[in-house]
Length: 174
Figure 1: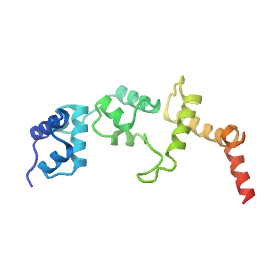
Figure 2: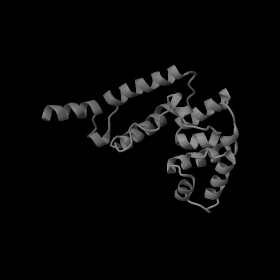
Figure 3: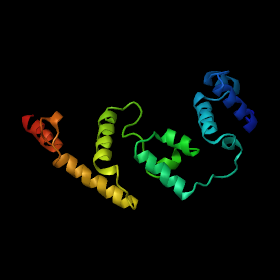
Figure 4: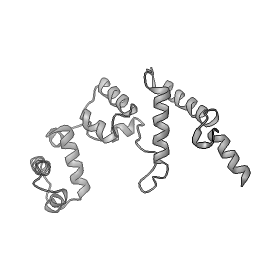
């Protein structure tokens, strides 16, 4: 199989972005998977031609990393959106920093809605307007909030009970 040059990758990305070719058409023409083509396009949109011509690993400033993580924690965008905004080539950089987007895995999204609701509540009640000096203080705040949320925070949709009280009432009825 012939190696596809950086110039060819840029050409195909431009063809897609200009609406001249679909991802399926590019995959067929290059004998690659559609997911490979999607990755090219994502990287091209994020980094331009550097996505294909840069040698070695790109270095990210400490300030850029901090801003990317803060934006992600503030719910301003998904991992993909944050990477695109800051020119980060791969979401692996965020994953390596323990930034995960979903509590579920593909095909097992049963907890996604409730968990997104929980993270929205914790950010509203304990994150916005605060500055954390290190990762440990943020983790401590989250752990304390989970304890509070489960054992002390009354919830109308649970009949004005805490989640633990609701769970115990179900278990005693069983």
